[in-house]
Length: 253
Length: 356
Image 1 (spheres, rainbow over the protein chains, first blue to last red):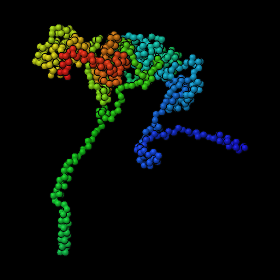
Image 2 (tube, rainbow over the protein chains, first blue to last red):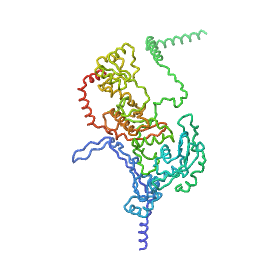
Image 3 (cartoon, each protein chain N blue to C red):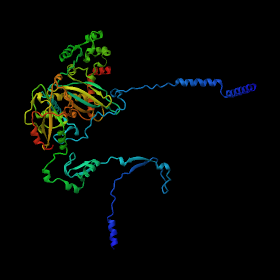
Image 4 (cartoon, rainbow over the protein chains, first blue to last red):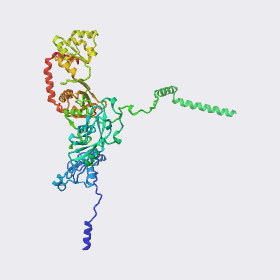
């Protein structure tokens, strides 16, 4: 009796093969030479060697696999927020979402489990999946603000907006907050001096943008000599304008 | 000694016998012939001299071989549409501006506080898909003049010579601003060599002088007035205004990519009224669209607004001014309209036939 139980237990607790991998060895083939038809109620004709020559129609190993849908467990930068159902390439999903435990397979249960509660919805931490990337990129660049060398000017948000657009960043004027101090020119003492301004993305994330003023003249002979890769060189702060103020507002640095 | 001699003789005799045997099969004539053919073959063989090629700098090498070039028709429709109010441009589709917005953007960068060129010319770059009705046929390069409602200083010197009879027409042409207006006497001057046609970029004629003008066809060649290029017609004043103020543009196919054409033209200066600039853009696009081949799909693929010294290129949507796809019914109706016009101007039609 005892022996019997032991045997059944052993059967129950049998080890499953751990390395169960999907093997795609299916090849769709086509006969090169079709065998001839046979008469009704008669045996099929004998197949010749040539009837076993095949042509490859499709190799499933090299076939592009469709996107996978998963439910995100948390906010993932560049992918989506918690509870979002995202459809991405299967390799990316396995390696970057499922293995680190950032997402689960899409089932009705998992959708219900990870959908955002009311409390989470009200406490928004991220405005969009890509806002953090924008913050990082804005923090890493040094923006060249080209101002005129001959005409008087006062720095305004739209100057920053136009300079950002030239550098490949698109933003609205109301997102830009300049340092409180007035920056005026032309003043060659301010040439290549650095100041910081704050960019607010989707009225939530804040990025600190380092800007340097460069003077430019319409007349080519009046222009200042070009410094190669000036953004890599260290620069002095612009008359201590905007330094402590921006550091206090720096949130997502 | 004697015995040695005798043996040598026998040897010689035997040798002679051997030669005689060979001669049985190969005659002297055949030998000579073979010799000749061998010589000929040897002469035929040209010695190939291998020239040593030294190092050629990469920029001087033949560019037509084995170079993979990127498709000039840029398609960014696979990219996302931005949802944030601040975004990094390279990860998203190009923003599409309206003409007014694009002009405003250029005005910002050209403001006195920045580049200080408020009167910079506004350039339009029109990218074309030059594929013809068949995939292997392409639209030819073309040069045209687009009529614009709001003129600006284009900086070119355009001299126009007008041929017409009748005092009314002459006065009309003079009033419109032609450089030289005349009739039969002008034709005589030109044939006599007193006046050079090459001084004038544009030649316009009224159909009433066409019979006399045929004498100058050899001199004018492709410039000979014809209604297709709108240099022959009854409405002289309008034609003169068009040629003196219009936008001269030319579409050129890419050297390596035959289906990519590019037009670069100036439509005005940034200090002009934005609405006037927009009107000019509209007329230019409509004029370009008349060259559309009879096939489906887009002809104008992308339109960019540029303005030096700024390197910004702002994309605008051309399809608010022209129809995006090939409209068969529209093409048909325009052809019908032409047919109706044609009998009204039999002289003009005859001139067209003569010019072509």
